Image (tube, rainbow, N blue to C red; front, side, top):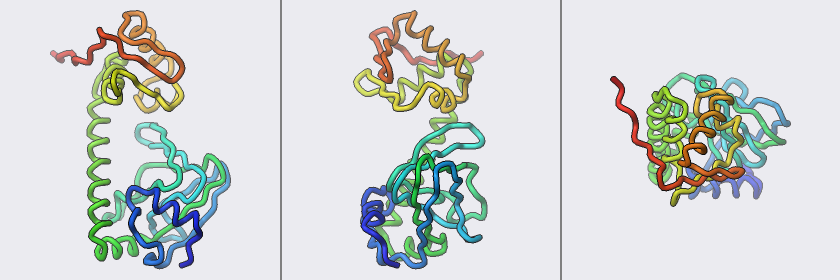
Length: 215
């Protein structure tokens, strides 16, 4: 398979495929999607791993409604390599997007022959497991304001949170309504625990994420 320079660059940007020689991949196919088209985990009836070469895919989880964006070097279809079940996610092209599809049988061969790739694969799967565990813990908090506080506490750096998403997207990530999110923001600002401006949130000295004990 002859990969273009953009494909080689995507490998370098990938947390998983960095260090893999593109020429070692057999049977890969590049597919280009127009804006709004859905990109699945399979191609011509074959389950595949995908890596974004250019453009961007919006990732929507059907069970939680969370939204993220996958750009060049982003991978999908890697968590169910060894089980015959597809992930409950929807991938939609935000712009014209090219994806390299690698059959999962070929990816399994690469794993068996490349110990570095296997290590990165296991590490990436562990990170996804931790993310899901943290998300389940977050969604188990019934109070919307407290849930937002825990979210801020988990992603703050030196008391600053860079949202990086719209309020609508944040509400979907937190599993609450847009109106509940704005009420939670208002409550935290009114109590002086946060100060927000645009996409930046500052956690003030009286900010606390101690969770209430359920009785």
